[in-house]
Image 1 (spheres, helix red, strand yellow):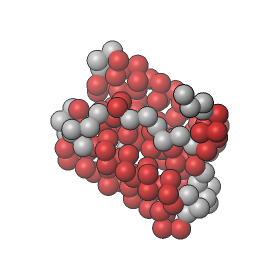
Image 2: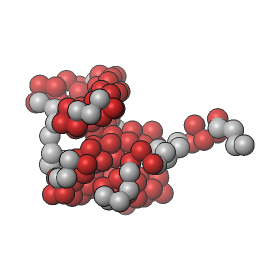
Image 3: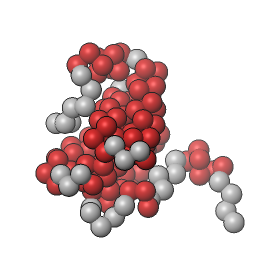
Image 4: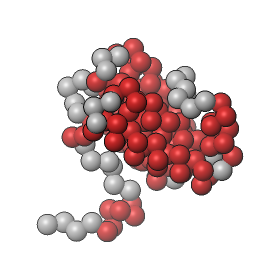
Length: 152
């Protein structure tokens, strides 16, 4: 991806361990949401970007991404896109959107989860569109969660 949020040292640490990447993603995503709630958009963008980079590492760590990897990446990307969009940075929003879709392209072309990858791209486009609010969308349910939901 063209935009970098983690310094080289932290990026290297994230790339060395699946569990470390997962921890950085989780903590950064939570920090981003907290900063967003507090009305600190610049800090929220920095934290969301860190979550996005960790999710990118998790997405590309294995030859074949899992559905959970796709959703984790998309959730972090949508949060980051929405925050940057709300800061009225259309060029950065466009660059980030293009970079995120490019990361999903291998899954669309030859991945086992093509439909999920396409749905993730749709969510990214919606999150980058000014008329849409990212918090108006639920994350796309993965298969494990979908089986546990009760419909009323």
